[in-house]
Image (cartoon, rainbow, N blue to C red; front, side, top):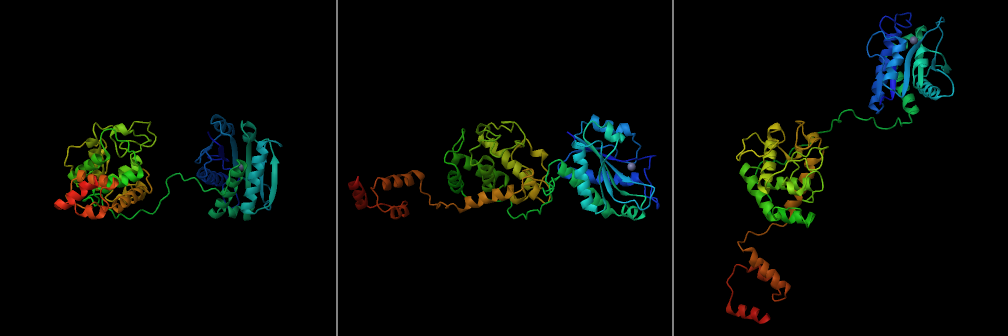
Amino acid sequence: MIDLTIDAGHGGKDSGAVGTTGVKEKDITLKLALKVGKILSSRGVSVNYTRTDDSSVELSQRAAIANNSKARFFLSIHINSASSPTANGTETYAFSAGGQGEKLAAAVQKNLVAAIGLTNRGVKFANFAVLRETAMPAALTEVNFICNPKEEAMLKDEAFLDKTATGISKGVVEFLGLKWEQQPQPTKPPETPKVEGITRIMGTAQATVSQMVSFAMKGNKEPQLPSCTLKELAEIFVSEAKAEGVRADVAWAQSLHETGYFKYGGIVKASQNNYAGIGALNGNAEGQAANFPTPIIGVRAQIQHLKAYASKEALVNECVDPRFSLVTRGSAEFVEWLGVADNPNGKGWAYLGRGYGASVISLLNGILKEEKEVEDGIPQWQKDALETLVEKKVIGDRAYWSKRLGEKITIGEVLGLLAKL
Ligand SMILES: [Zn+2]
């Protein structure tokens, strides 16, 4: 839907009024129309134009352009002229009193006068063709008098034209009931400072399987993993990551971020063995992300996709990542660069992904803060047995016995324990 058709008066063979030093109305109205359109577009007002270059457009065609596009409102921009070289000031026309056209004219007139400070000649009514033939409320503004050398000189000043365009635009915005103070709507993502890359994706994991598992359990006691246990999955991450030279803990942190600690609930379903939303683009319907036949293949695809971004090295395993070939190899060496918006190369895993890398890093730090289990070679069933006996109060000093799990036991100690049972 078009909010406003902007009509630059005259054009082509019709110069409009011409000043004593040769300034042509048609050139000024075109400049102003384009400036107004740019300002309004940046504030979310949709506009079209009756002309955007120096072409001749009949008056009835101007109205037809607005009518055919079903624009809500119409605004024609002109520069005034009179026989007297001292005629001066600003005036804005509507077709008749009492309607929306008059309100539009009044808002434009008020804001334009406030912006450029010339004589306020007020809102007037006239049977101009573009006001008459347009189907929507319409106004026509006459910025100043080109026949007045002082006011003609202003029209040569780009800063004056900018002020004029701003005044007209403010009037339209006020008439539409929008707030001028609102931040302009960016037409493209704003430039943001890129993030310094620190944490390499390639390398050896610093976290152990037990740290990965215990951190994940803190975030979600019931991970949705239909095909394996959490520990088995962490072990798959470690072996698959190692095969390709990727940090398993980084990939794990990314999966926690992508799946919400394996809670899922987004586009990807737990049954898809897709732990990093591969192929789950914004706007995809539920379940359209890639499906992987097993956890191993799912993890392998994620590791390969990370490697695609983090390195230019060839894959070790056969490629199972369906999107591997779409990645610019080596374009995101660091975790901090996985979000496109944060990456000086303008590439990355997540679009726009501002802060994506930081979220993964924060999870990685959480994993690394988990207590590291001592690599003591004691089988888990023996550790579990100790916990059971502590719980059952057969053993009182957990710390004492925990340290001695690998030692030999004396007959006396056995008898002591048996007696407690
Ligand atoms: Zn004119």
